[in-house]
Amino acid sequence: MAELFAYCLHLVGRKRRDPGDDVVSRLCAVVGVTDDEIATHAMVLLFAGHETSAVQIGVGVRMLLENPAQWQLLRDRPELVATAAEELLRACDASSLPRYARHELTIGDTDIAAGDLVLLGVASANHDRAAFTHPEQVDITRQESAHFLFGYGPRYCLGAPLARLELQVAFGQLVARFPTLTFAVDPATLRERDDIFTGGLTALPVRW
Image (cartoon, rainbow, N blue to C red):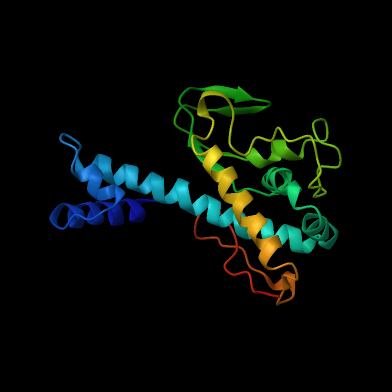
C-alpha cells in the first residue's frame, strides 16, 4: 500500500506539470486539494475501483469452469447472469481484511487491545450454514443472496453497484462470446497471488 501511495504521489506531480483528460488531472485543478489528498483518492480509485473487480472476474470464471453444470446452465439461461454474479461473490474465499481496533474489546475468549491488528474473514459469513443452504456449493439459481462481501451498515462498500454491473457485463459477455470456454491447463496447477491481500490468480489460462 505504501508503494502504491508513493506511485500515486509521483503521478500527481506529473499531472500537475502536464495535465491531461483524466481524473487525477481534474483533481489537481481543484483549488485547495493537497497532493497527499489527491494521491489517496487516486489510490482508492485504482485499488478499490479496479483491482477488486478484476480479481473477482478471474475468481468467478474459475468457479464457473470448475462447476461445468453451472457454466452450462448460465449458457442456456443467460438471464441468470445477475444471480450468478451474486452467487460467485458469495461463494468466493475472499482474503482477510486488515483493520486496527479503535477500542479495547473481547470477542468470544479473545481479548483485543486498542490498536491491535485484526484480520477480518468477511467471507466466512457467506458460508454460514444457518444462513445458506449447502454454502459449499456454487448455485447460480440461489435465492439467498444477502451476502456480506461488500460489508454491512455504514461501512457498506460505496462501489458495490458498480462492481455488480462490471461482473454482470463480464460474465454475460463471456457466455455470449465464448460458450465453449474451458481450462487450458490442469486447474490444480493454478496459483494464488500472495503479494496483495485481494488475492486472486497469478494467471488463468483458458481456451475456446
